[in-house]
Image 1 (tube, rainbow, N blue to C red):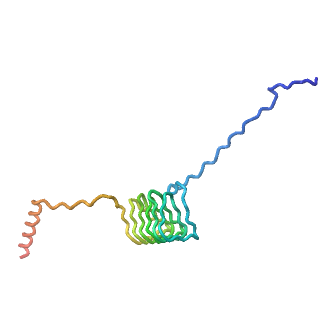
Image 2: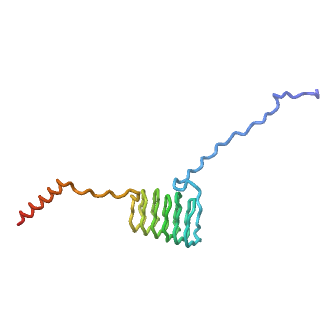
Image 3: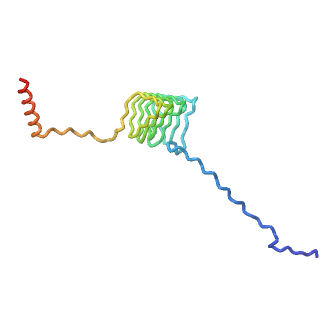
Length: 169
């Protein structure tokens, strides 16, 4: 009567918690797919900036910025007086200087650029302000020499010119 043995089937079993599906991570904007260093709004830099990582400028920079193979973003509060050289350059703030993007350059609707842009792909969004020139064919292609006209054509052109002169006399 007091010696009741409990049947293992009657014992409550431990139940593993049901895994809760994780919410999908928001996909980052393709332009800033990697983490980036940030120059904050109150930071002022004079000189040359170079590095091996992406950079976001929200402050003031004077000089030059060289980020070969990496992304450079000039944020809405960024004020840059410098020549820029990066893989991709996105301007949301103000830039005075030449901009070189080995892959692309984007000037957003809040962006202002005073300088020359050299890049194979350039986007100026509606509302962007830009003063300068754009070179979208900066490749190493040497200009093709202009071929001299063939002698037959040169004679025909000269002959036609002589006839035109004779008619006007």
